[in-house]
Image (cartoon, rainbow, N blue to C red; front, side, top):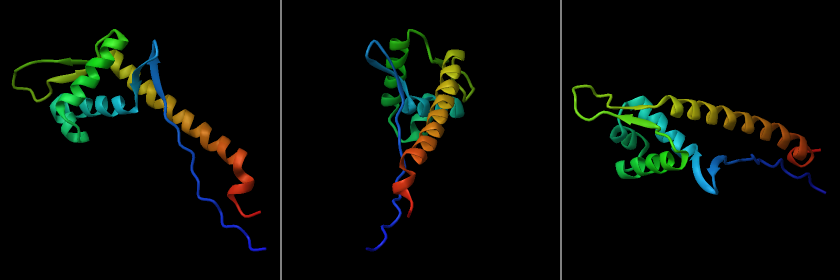
Length: 123
């Protein structure tokens, strides 16, 4: 009987936070907040991640409503290019979420190897 080829499988996971059964925070919002942090502008952030301004602004506002706190502070006018910045709460949520996500990916990879070792390699 011919030997089976090794399976090239990788586990994936998706993590998000809910409040009262409603989506409140996840990786997509993290990408938006990181882009705001890096560009200093919701408009530039939207462009950087290939989304419309309206979409990014709407997702941020929806999350703020569900979380009951602001995530981005904006300043209108002025000469500065940095007219939007993350609130301290948003920074903590962003860092905490990304840390948790990475920890969960590490656990998943380790447990996947243990659970599926015998079918993932030629035995």
